[in-house]
Image (tube, rainbow, N blue to C red):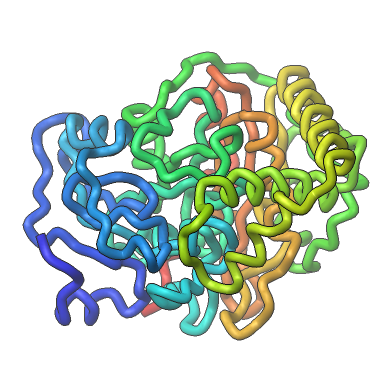
Amino acid sequence: MSEVSENAVMLDPYNAFLYRDDDAVGGSGALSDVTVGVKANIAVKGMPFHAGIGAWEDRRADADAEVVKRLRDAGAAIAGILNMEEGALGSKTDNPHFGQTQNPHREGYSPGGSSGGSGAAVAAGLCDVALGTDTMGSVRIPASHCGVYGFKPATDRVSQDGLIPADPTLDAIGPLARDLNTLERVARVMSDFGEDDRDEMGATLVDHGVEIDPQVDVVFQRALQVLDQPIAHRLSYPSSRIRFAGFVGVSKSMAGDLAGVATSVHLAKLLTYGPRRSDADWAEDQKVLAEVKLSVQDIVNGVGFFFLPTVPNPPFRHSDAEPTAQADFTCLANIAGLPAISIPAGWTDDGLPIGVQIIGEAGAEAGLFRIARQLDDKLGAYRAPQT
């Protein structure tokens, strides 16, 4: 095994892989034809295990994470370690220690985050599947921005063993792939996959207070038109308030885990939000999260599926400020602990990908993939990057 070679850099101009195993081969089993890249906060024995934090650059994992072990046992080849946001907090993947990851659809554009290396590697065809982590949307956001498919398992249906956490109450390790069949094959191996299925109408969210880019809205409305009239639902709080309550919890959790660890000025600032929250405000945050968790679970349990834009904005330039509302829709599945899939749904006028997401029931992952496949067949929006 070796650090990324000069030849590998030529093959990966996106700075998606930070470490490659040039000798990686698969074994026998259901995934013997699949190569897998792994986000740098998930343990792969002998490979870097630093969560994008410069102070941990020389750390190597002593053993495989449980999800990696499952994939190896099924015959997958583990190709290497992927770039990510520092500490997995953010949705841009402009890492101060390991560099920017480029969106394969447009140089100079963000692939999203925090699993930006995972999204870019899959979109560019550098591996068949990439593992990312999703705390507030960090698998589905890069899936949307990179024009690929991403699955966040239900929180309690995928192991966190071997994960450097952001917030264990929200974290889920999930795969990204260039097609739903590969995504489902991997999901069935790495997570507890329920076979329940329901033929229901589904729901969508209204009066959420999120400013949606007009091009994203056009794509989302087109997706809704091919569904059977989803039922409109409202939540008790604006999406920005819900997302902020989740962010405060992540900041609070990470601040404790990273106490005494040298980080960038940017991450250090983000880690102050949780600890400086007053007891009264923190109690209110917890109330928001508890109410929203029950509300989203009730919606999904009642109608089967929840359809939302993945991200309210299209991919953006690295030179632009990171849009604050990127996780306003994706955070709902994390807060509710439910599985969710992002699929490519359309394109901006200048050729950048836009995704939509579907939240489903825990234990009904088969049904969630069925609905995703039906929508994907009708939209036909997947497109490989133009090289």
